[in-house]
Length: 417
Image (cartoon, rainbow, N blue to C red; front, side, top):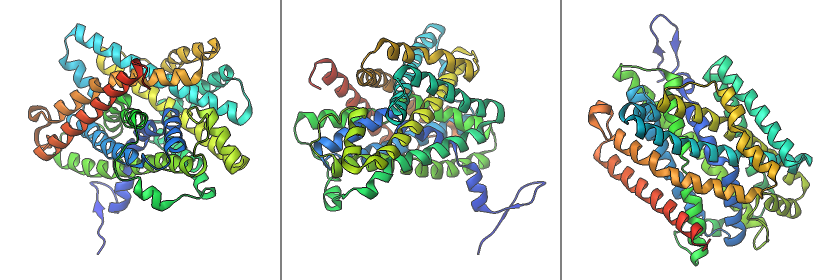
């Protein structure tokens, strides 16, 4: 029998409708998992090694679910974002140093996303990279204006709409491919084939959990749901958040897996797929111009959505650690400059994307370790502190992700990648 929930002073609310009204923050955070950097890695893995590394994406998504839930849990249980909590606890010098590394992470994220969007405009319309980067910046400012003027809920709807476009753009090609589902299932068994597959797996896994997404999610839930001292309401929000995270990362994880399957089915052994431009050309040659256009649209939506979410994260980091609030539109205008400089200088965009991933790898421990420590702190979390099984699971995930990022950095700097 279906029941309804009555809100004080208001009409009866159906439980499913009530749950739906609480969803959204995780979908904004999930944009980080389908950004242009992921596109190149997934397509390259499928083209070079077929279905071998499907298990890597599955494992990465499971880790991401845990990390993003903890970030949201921290924001809901304490009423403070991760940057705010760190800003309250660190001495002035430590706070400034921590902000500096977090700001570099945010800048590296923005760099990859603006460049990815510019590449999409070049693919679709032949627009040169520099004007394309400027256009991405202008449009992302428009998206951020939605949040500034109309509140977070409309912004969430815009991001969810872009996620739908991203999903169609990157999953649509599967309908034109001949995926070997038996081989795809075999790809769920963890294994490697030489050092190059270890490097690629480290890159895919290590770059999946983005530092800015961790900072962002704790801010999103606080901004969306407000601060509550009512433990019953917090528990309701945590239940809704679990659904939110599972749904959002199911979509994002499915998109990443679809990209790998598309490449494994249609691009085996095709050279040049380590770059987004080369992968697009190969997809278009193999599956036709229609699929190529659909892919380009998905990439464009990915760049626009991820750069907007990244700018929101950067503003939250600055406000929490420096206690300085800069309007997100002003921040957008400032933080796009490094990406435009790189595009204007004619630097290889793929090389710039690789460099940005190195910065993100360096920033991972600074976000993950405090997140695990704070959510395991009973004096801070009260009755919402992580229980022992979750603490152990979190420790394993944190160690695994940090180890993979260290491996990625080592292989990158020693020239073995």
